Length: 427
Image 1 (cartoon, rainbow, N blue to C red):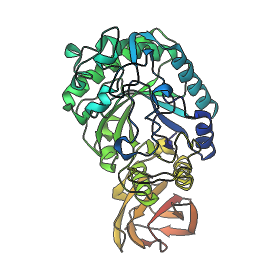
Image 2 (image 1 turned 135 degrees about the vertical axis):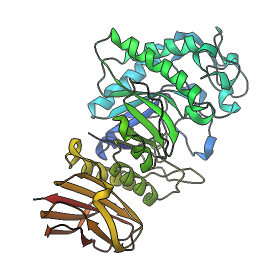
Image 3 (image 1 turned 30 degrees about the vertical axis):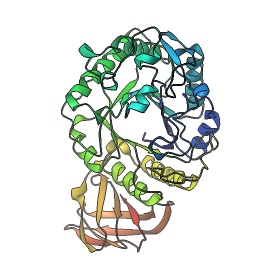
């Protein structure tokens, strides 16, 4: 299975004003099967990062936090103080309900346990800030929050929270955990990995005495990086704004590689569609688009993308994501792997392509950047069925049966506007 979605900005659980049942209805109706949500250890301020109506920036009274709110005092927009030694049981009720409603719609939940504190304003707003933690145990500096365990004043609080969440959600089979969102923003990779590895160990130890096990993801970098040190219990390697090289440079790990967040490519579908198809055809297993059309006022994902919002989303775009998911699931995925060597450009004016193949049986080619692709196919001789598809809507542009014999022969696509997909199946 591939997990593909275009989901809200991670506040579905922690923002009590957000109607997550309506949101999950839309994801299911649009043919998507994943949502990413933050656990409530981090929240944002309204207007932060130029995001209009940010679901991750709840009003103080709407903030659902795993720790018990003690009072609404505290200056600098902190929105209350919290006891890091006590749980808010209403929060856990909401979290369980969210998982159950997602499961009912066959939607997988990526639960992100922690998030990097991007600036001092956000840090002053955090329940883990020393001024907001009435029973002690908070940190004074945002640089200490995810420091290596030996130097981390919050390590006991963080471990206790992970154990509680993992125990609370053990029965759910539509769940995997990401340790922390974008830890690489201020740590070097060695320091970030030390803290993350500790949290992975906590999950694994906790689940040893529980009936079920869950996959664990680590967020390692933006765009691409060759991972040098991967915890053996990590099953999913998350990149943000991922490029195909993120998959190709880490394929040897034999783990799922995820494009876990998109953005910063404008307010139109085409750049994100190219990112999606190129990444999945490189061998990616997860595509999680960040869709700003979901807001508190528009849980159905119909909010217009306005101002300087750093991304894109719409009902029409979500249909494009569903087209890619349906195409991928129409392949014999366990047999497929990246095989760019099977196709090379013979001419035409397309910029580049990606190839996913079960050599000798099935080839899936994604080409973009021009108007017509002339490909040289290096495939075993035989009769093949070729289907050319427009990825924006899944429309079949041309179907033909052809006899292909070595050496590689030119194969010309129909004229296309932005990109095109070829599915070649030996008959």
